[in-house]
Amino acid sequence: MSFGFTARLRTCVVALAVVGASSSMLAAGASAATFNAKTTAQLEEAVSKLKGEDRQERTTTQLNLGISLRVDESYIPEENQRLRIYKKIAGAQDEATITDVRAELQDRYGEPPESVTHLLEAAILRLECERLGVSQVDRKRDQIHMRFMEKANVDPSRLMMLVAKNAKRGAQFTPQGVLRYPLTNSQPQEVLMEIRLLLDELELEEVAAQ
Image (cartoon, rainbow, N blue to C red; front, side, top):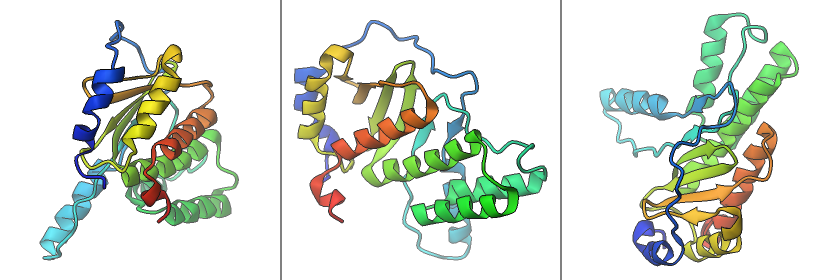
């Protein structure tokens, strides 16, 4: 059902794509951070090859949200422990792992600060994006720009309806295959939640039922 996602959206491009005049919008937030698991996935793949294991290629999603996603020294003083936590979060392949990391942090270091909470929430968002076949999510001021993989588990008809419904607010699907969708809030936690809700709206029904 999900094969040839880009091809199935050609009608969406023709009907709804509007090329925006602005190409220089900056990602919001002074402490912008990029969160992705690409390096971890490549290392895991290399180790598997050395072991002679047949490892299925893991798709990764890049998030550029203009949100502070970090573990501060004031929260975890030991650098090696901070790096260990980063590695566990970046290498997580299910939400249960993120839940375990959250519990470990709270048990060892106390209530996580906002930047750590956002890092954990972004990790869950990244997993959801990878499950649906979203390759990249960029925050551009008051918009989200979302790129899809060829085999995305996204319903094209739902995408077209969402764009049409929110066109006056700036929603577009460009000829380059980028969904531009408006945000209603600039607070980090709300931005993360809005993106997850958007993914829920776009998801194929058979994928959601699994």
